[in-house]
Amino acid sequence: MYLFRRYRLILALTLVFSFGCSFASAADSPVIDRIAKAGVLKVGMSGNQAPMNAKNRSGQMIGLEVSLANMLTAMMDVKLEIVNKPFPELLPALKAGEVDMVMSGLTITLQRSADILFVGPYMLSGKSILTKSKILANSDDAGDVNKPNLTITALENSNSQAYVEKHIPEAKLVLSKDYDSAVQMVLNDKADALVADMPVCLLSIMRYPEQDLVTLREPFTIEPLGMAIQSNDPQFLNLLENYLRTLEGMGVMDQLRKRWLEDSSWIASLP
Image (tube, rainbow, N blue to C red; front, top):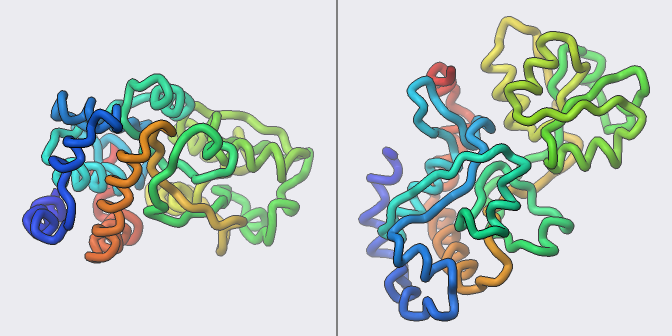
């Protein structure tokens, strides 16, 4: 919120378009029309993907994507409604019109782009592993963990699941509903490693400093993360692309990435 308050006036003065102007073309944009009438932007998030999005001890949503969503609604001059759903249910909710967009650590992939649109990327990530094994953490590629005696966990319906199925088929794959349960599998020696985006792995190491968790020096892949919206609304796509381009140009996104990915002080607020 500190960045949101600081930049709201500047953004209002520097943007060369306005959300109100977009409303004039709302007949061509069902999502913009819906947001304008309700005065609310509905954003789908899992609520358990720190540092991207998570609930603190008081139940408040925090994270890089929460900060970004607040900035978008400030520019639109509407309210933010975060719709919490398990990760596997987020894209179906988007397609059903239950949310206006999804921001939940979504990797921009060829398969997903077949029936939804992506805005971004607003961050680059990559597939890594969280493990107690220093041997596994020294892996150079997925082939080093592609062994039948290893148990791997990954988030259900995620790009990590697809990655394991394609590149680590020999290992036993156990799917998890959320990252908290997946990390607990590693902590309790029920899985040899969690395959997840690098920020998730780094956060888990900072969150459990006494558990001897380790991760890769470099991720196996480089992957862009973006906002998912319905495929039938190029007007909404254009609006969000302009907003994101403005935030990047002003250096706001760099500040958000430093706030949530480099400064670990906020971790103490997690349950």
